[in-house]
Image (cartoon, rainbow, N blue to C red; front, side, top):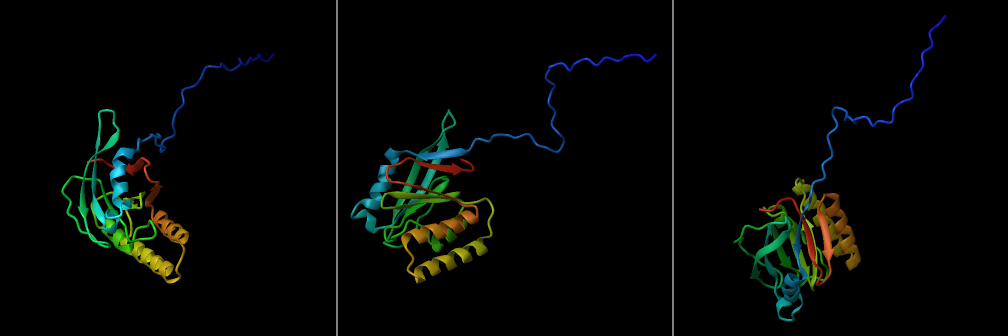
Length: 201
């Protein structure tokens, strides 16, 4: 006679979950979001909207610092006045971002000269001001500079040759920037500017 074996129902106790080897635990890294509040923006908005000021390019750099709560706030900046279509300035503070204005331009977009300077600089990116608007550009960690600049300059020349609309300028150049992993954000006049930084010095 065969012995009967009774199978007890499985208990509803939760088993400890184990991770498979080779899989890394996901970690939610907090992004370093720096901000330029509306009060501080008024100064830069005025530089690009005032009748006299908008005849000159303005350039400088921003220095951000973390407070006790971990928020990254604008600490200080310097400013240099230039000509209508060019400007030179020297770095005098330990900063994360440069900025400049385009008073002579009809479109809020970076020129090839701008991009060349950004890629050969130590800064993480740049803010472009025009008529109160702000365009924030954060550069990627790695990029083929020669390949990018050649493609960007070719597209810019093509857009100028066919007298493209402002919409096409922004759309087609923005596409190339995002293709090469640049972070691009546009902010309207008076709005708080938020910049994703990799580090804060």
